[in-house]
Structures are given as structure tokens and as C-alpha cells.
Amino acid sequence: MLFYKNAEEYFEEEYKRMLQRKMANLPDQGSITKLFLPSPELNEHDHFPYYSLTHEVESLEVDHRGIVGERHQAVTRPSGGRELKVYPRGTEIRSHRHLFVSCTSDIKELSRRMELEITPEMLGLNLLIDRDDDQDFSITELPVGTMMLLAENGATKPAKPPLATLTGFVKQEGCGITGKLIADHYGDPALTRKFREVSKDHRGILCSVEFPVSTTVVLQKGQRIFFRYSKGLAP
Image (cartoon, rainbow, N blue to C red; front, side, top):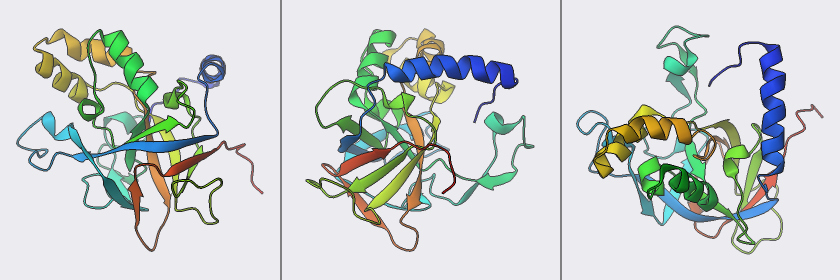
């Protein structure tokens, strides 16, 4: 989580963000088009930075802690460099980093800006979500707190409760780990810095799993997504 310097900067930058969101063609409905898991033969300690690579799968099993068996599955986590302005490194905090979500349009735009092909696997993606009408849109501009209610393929509205609920937590900005992976793949060290600079608005978002809690649910291709944009008001 990154922070603004003060309230004045917040208002200035959020006004710009609202203009970006207006152009982002955010949908009311969509579907899961692809799912990904970390490559099983790679691990965090022996294959830096390749442990962030994912590969396409047919389904994901999730609960309120995240993807079952995945390294980010947790209720809490130790704070890191992004939280140093608030916590000493290693402070135990609530984990919201459960799934990394993007859309086809954002990945195409990121590839255009990088001037080479960027794949969901390179980014370490977990879910690819696209509009039902195949129009371009930027899921990276999804407001924080937006709920994504999942329903079965063909559903016209979500059940109550939904199959699952994902909540948009924060925009995923560029990082050196993924940048180095891309630089290594293309044999160009300069791509690490370039990725950090151009991926800010077209990489995707991090989501937490709000529901289910006491059970798990299987996410699959074709499942419907109903977007609910929060007013931020208590009932």
C-alpha cells in the first residue's frame, strides 16, 4: 500500500484518477476467461525471480485466506517495504493480497507500452477477467473496495450469497521482481526499469477473498462476474 503525502495531494491525484476511470469503460458484468497458478517446479528461494511466474490452469480453489496451497494464502502476513511509513518491517498485519487480477485489454496496453509481448504468466496473474461484450476496458482503474460477485456460467444475476466475493484492494504497480523476469526473458537489463515506469496504470489489481469463509469454492472459466461499486456508506 502506497500513500499520498498529504490531503492536498490526495485530492489532486484522485481527481486525475476519476478522469481516468471515466475513460476506463468499467463494466457492470464480465466473466472469468483464464486462471493461473504459480509454476510448481519453481520456488521462492532457488529460482529468483522466476517464482513469480504462473501457468494457465482449469480451476482455482479459494477461501477467505486466498488460493488454497498458494504461497500468498494467509489471514495475516509480515509487513514489508511498502508499509515502512506505517509499520516496522515484519509487523504482523491483515493480508489482503489473495489474488492478482487483470484483463486482456490492460495486458495488451502494457505490451504496447513495453514494445514487446507481455503475457499473463510473466506478470504472475491469477485471474483474467473480461467484459461480456468484448469491449476494451481497464480493470486496473477499478475503485478500491469494488466487489466482484461470482456466479455460475450463464447466470443473469448473482445468488445471495454469491458463489464467491472478491474485493478490489489496491492497484498493482510495477515491481523490480517482475521487471527482472521480463528483462531476463528478453535479454535486455534495461527492461527492468522500463517495466517499473510503464506498468503503473495497466498491470491489474490485487484482490482479497471476502467470501466464502467456512468452506472453499472452485473458480472456473466462464463463471460470471457482477461488479458492485461501493459508495463507502454504512447501511
